[in-house]
Image (cartoon, rainbow, N blue to C red; front, side):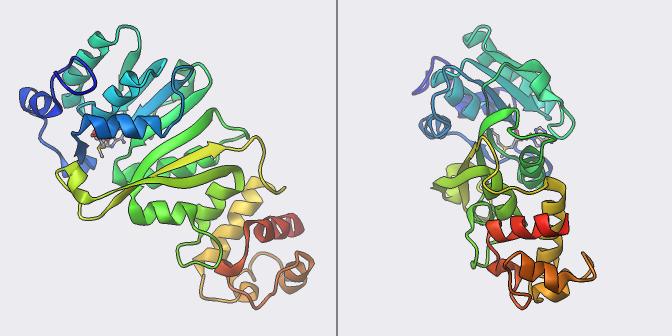
Length: 278
Ligand code: SAM
């Protein structure tokens, strides 16, 4: 019996199902169920929410989510070896856990769920940023999800919450903070995982805002920001010269200095520029 439920400790589960971690699938498991329950609590009240978990692995975070009262969990796992362990959890929480053996980059999960939806995951590092960008750029806002509670490498987490003027500030920070409230809620040393990764990790909690902080067309904003940060050492007038022939005038009309660099521009500034070039 474990600290949070009547199921066996994760080390026993891993041994029983021979779940040796695969590097190619970004498998670094959390085995401390008190820690996984704590991460689940960072997602807020789960009792009235459907939770999507990407990459449950042997189910440590899944068990944390269920023990914390999640109404329903849809767990999307690519590695079929994990399915028997996840079925044991489903049996211990009847009707509350569905497992989808699929690639999270290909699955159409909102079809299976009832809002409000919270996404909670200890993400595989190789697909984490791509999934985040997809969740942050849905066809319409507000998105299907209410919040994201996600584990990243610490350096990526810092890029998500970075403020203008800092080295970590870039496309990810603009994308995230334009339409969500994003903060780091926990940091974890490598030893928290089995096997330990090379770097520290952090959990970021992002809450979807009802509407963007500043008006802008998402596609134009995305293009402007990508171009500006692609050549982040260049002045804006040089980095963005492909956007419009009169880019200096448009920068000035947006209240920006043509000689500034991308990392000095606030989200409000990028949105003003996106409106000018739209
Ligand atoms: N949630 C577990 C935990 O906290 O211990 C495992 C986390 S481990 C960092 C990442 C998990 O994502 C692994 O179980 C891996 O098999 C799974 N995974 C990797 N790529 C995936 C993909 N494209 N779609 C779904 N799951 C994936």
